[in-house]
Image (cartoon, rainbow, N blue to C red; front, side, top):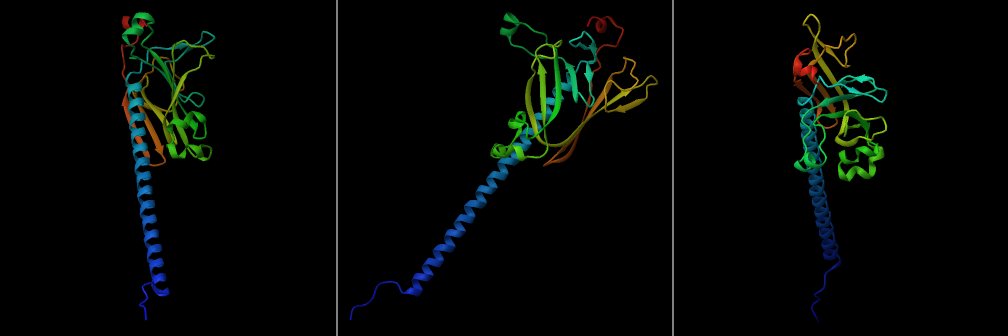
Length: 239
């Protein structure tokens, strides 16, 4: 009588079960690794973006020129710094570098008019500030992105389009506060600039930013504002 070499039904079922368990384990392991990699990439994206945004804002504020107003389309003088419900934050800054080629062929002012504003994450301008694997679902994202805009000329018209870049996404809220000295040298804090009842001589001595981020929570930063030349001096009047 010949000896049977095939698998019995029980052995076959055991082999199938073991294979299925191994397949599920492998799938779970791959999924776990993929998910871990995705979370790491998202964490790196958030951290890198936040650091770059803070550096950009800090550079602008530390170069702020509180003595350089601008004129609008109607020739009306606009304050060097404007912050209110209509204009989130706009100011004139110094130190706008240019290449040697620009200096030779098309020189421009080193002063720059900069604006910051919030836009809904669904706004197409926010695409750059969104994690790549979430961009297809951009319309359903909550929160805001912070947009930095600048104009190529200080005295620009309302028809000039600014250069806009989304520098930070996943923002819940953002506030700027200004600390200045009143006529009695008392420190006063305001969220609008120029402050109510301004005489024209006020200058912020400190700007405070309070940011609430979807991942990192509340973040506070403070910057001392360069004061430049005292008003009434030849250097200030020369501007």
